[in-house]
Structure formats: structure tokens, C-alpha cells
Image (tube, rainbow, N blue to C red; front, side):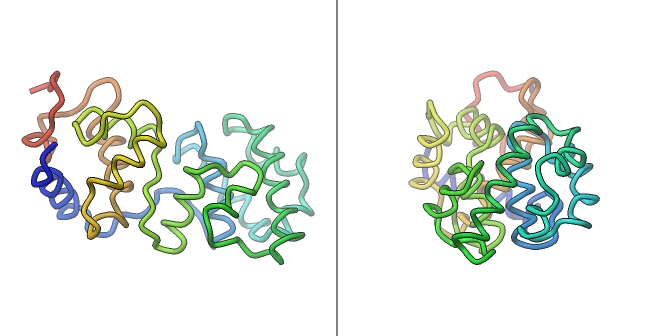
Length: 210
């Protein structure tokens, strides 16, 4: 895709939503990390149904460790993979207390040393909590980027690398949020709503629904 078209795509997305935010509910940097871990292979809406009650009683690593795995499961049992997620959240909370004095580390490498935190989760946290210009590739970002012609990637990490190269610096902070929201509400997996898409004139998708 031409760089001019890439610029037009993100300029258009910026105009309709200048300051996009995560749709996950959280109350502080720690609960944001917990919410992101819970959102893996689950919808934000589904996670948001469970977390308000959880975060009322557990908004620090110390409180989460005190709650324990079985206690945590009672709050998140409606979320997919809740058994493994409960284990990871307690594990990362213990590690935060033992190795980081209860504070969340500010580098991708150290974040990824925490149980349940992969590259995407680390990128989301760095972007949302610290405003870093990271690009987190979830299923929406991967699908939309490949579909419209921004990338030609076989893996999420490859997609991230390609997006890093082509997205102008002035758009990088919010780029993955724009792509997530576009994929969630317009460029949907089964039937993209091309007729109402504000970037369809630069989209290279061969099977547009208009």
C-alpha cells in the first residue's frame, strides 16, 4: 500500500475518534494488567461483566494473593480459560510482590517475565498505562491489517513489525486502538460493513460488500 494511502487511512480514523481508549474496565495500572490478561481469547464486554465486582475487593497484588486462586475463580468463572487465567493472575501478583515491590515493571521484557503476560499483553499495557507508541496485535488488528492491505503477515509478530514500518510516527500511539475498534464495529470478521466504512476508498480488500 502507498504511504499516502496509509496516511489517509489513519488520518480518517483519527478524525472520528481522536483519543481512542481501551474498552476494558480498570481502576489503576494493576487492574489494567489483570483485565488485559483476562481478555485473552475473550471479549472485552465479557471481561467487563466480571471485573467491577472483582476490582472492588482486589485492586492490588497483595489483595489478589490474599484472595487466592479459588477465590479468584468465583469472580471470573464466566470468562473463558478462567482456570489457567486464575493461576497466572495469582502467579504474576506473587512475582510483582517478591521481585518488583508490588509495582508493575515498565519494560516489555520484564512485563513478559510475569506469568500470563505475552508480547501482546505487554504492548497493550505499555500503550494504555504509559502512553508508549507500542502496537499490540490482537485478532482484530491482524485481520484488518491483512484484509485492507496494510500488511501481508502470517503471524501477529510479523504483522506488528510491518505496521511499525509503515505507520507514521504521529499515529502510532493510537494506531492499534483504531484498528481494533474498526475491526470490532465495521470491518467485522464474517461480513465487513464496507458501505459505511470511512476508509473503503483506500482499502485493497477484493471482496468488498458494496
